[in-house]
Image (cartoon, rainbow, N blue to C red; front, side, top):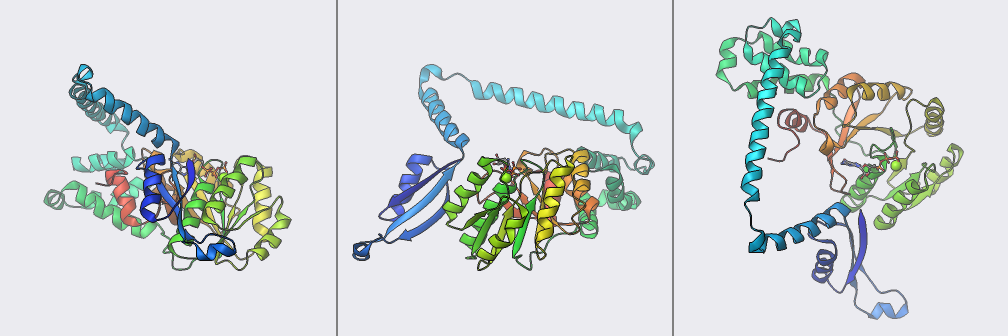
Length: 381
Ligand SMILES: Nc1nc2c(ncn2[C@@H]2O[C@H](COP(=O)(O)OP(=O)(O)OP(=O)(O)O)[C@@H](O)[C@H]2O)c(=O)[nH]1
Ligand SMILES: [Mg+2]
């Protein structure tokens, strides 16, 4: 991510600078009116300071697009690439559809009895849909139990997708617990495996709390295993102009919490832990044990396999109470993990994150969003 600070006499000129240097996809992380410092600053006009950031990939993409534009406007280069690539993609789609039919037919014998015994072929389609989302068989069976008993008449009366969504909603309302965010926690620890997006999520939430809700936020980095980890959080604390404390062992956290106690919210970034490494897990436990009143978010990536997620969840079962953040929804190709995790842990789902952009790519989890992901994927249409 490329982050840059811009100064201009007014908002319009500041935005023009951002657009010229970082492109139209740049996001504004912070914006404020700044009075020139010093005794004479009092008499000078205030100017606007904007901190903006853009993914390096989108800078590269802008460059590629510009190059493509110049190639396309050159008549010598104007071959019919789009129509031929369209042909290829529709052929690939046809092949994929054919393959799905073949695979589904082959798998018919492997279907659970509850599905095989249903005399309604539409149930098999729905079951396959759930199975393709990697919802665990036992959970998929539960979702379908009621559907199987529905009369053929009812199944014929509504589009199957509609019935499926209704049943899914009933199941999710019953079995998946969602955080209603009615209380803003004071001290929040972010824990989880390496590289799942803990630090990025902290930055997103810190920005939301401080810029959108006007809350004062303090940060603590307990991740001193990698120099880059502290620097990563330091960049965000500088941009957002919020205090950061760094602790090197669990005994130092009390003092840091005291220094930050005037803040409304204190977020603690912990080092990514290898859940198979007992020593690392014990260190995390020691750190958590020092602070009595706290909320904990277990951060899990939706791109992990169901087996890995189960193992990770088991490794964190020394924490009796936590909420869940599911990251990298944008990179996942199936979303069954959301339902599997919720039913497996019985913990509240709190946030999903949908990309690398700070602060935009984070959402509060809702039942409707889960239904959408399972039935339509991660698209906005
Ligand atoms: N695609 C995508 N990438 C994300 C998301 N959240 C975080 N990332 C990226 O994942 C990578 C790791 O993110 P970090 O926030 O450093 O992860 P971490 O859990 O703090 O990592 P450690 O501190 O090393 O354990 C970075 O490249 C992030 O930009 C997300 O929702 N979607
Ligand atoms: Mg981190």
